[in-house]
Length: 293
Image 1 (cartoon, helix red, strand yellow):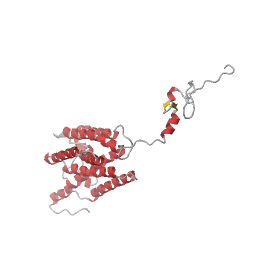
Image 2 (cartoon, one colour):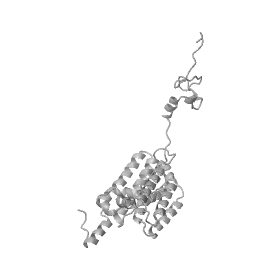
Image 3 (cartoon, rainbow, N blue to C red):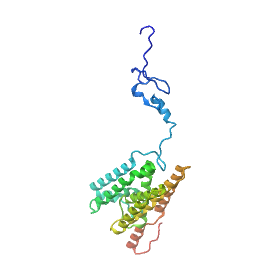
Image 4 (cartoon, rainbow, N blue to C red):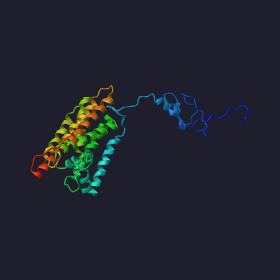
């Protein structure tokens, strides 16, 4: 180095790179890879990160983080499709072990309350492909909008609790076993209506959607009206809790409300006596049902 010459400044993160640009905030030399656009000039990576800590992060409309990609919707679609493929490969085994069967649930196989909501009519059924196609189309059509309003976690909880509500209704009031995501899908219909009302939107289209599907539920043979109506009622109730919780302590109120709904469903299933079990008892023994031991 010649006498009187100054050392060439280098990037503080990449010492091998020469630079004459400095961070507008901390005055450290930064190379092009470390330059972050600021309101005036450039800042270094650390200063930008530190500044973002004081910036309020975007939130979903009714709580939860901001949603750009509806990952939960895509995940639920994938799980339903994978379950259907499993049915195609091993239909009898999957249905026998995981369907929402009131008698089996009564005897302690409680996982069926959720697993049955991810299955659909077996491939041997004439309505097999139509069943999963309609449900997945509905999830694809309305799931992303609800997920953006609620955030990932709340949307996922809405879906699962609505599915549980549909299964609980099947358990109490249905004789045959049932499968299908329809309880959860009807729960999303109910939630869509609640959200539209809460935001002041015209909800007549949603009412027509629910009405048409309700008519089909009772007109088309083989459809579990219990699962549909149970999911619709529970989904709408969970949506009311999410949408109408006051701003102050919103998360606490929302999660406490949802926990109360789940507790009621669990207690209903645990202490309830299913119609299917009572009917089977009377058929076999020809005497009145004596009640749970």
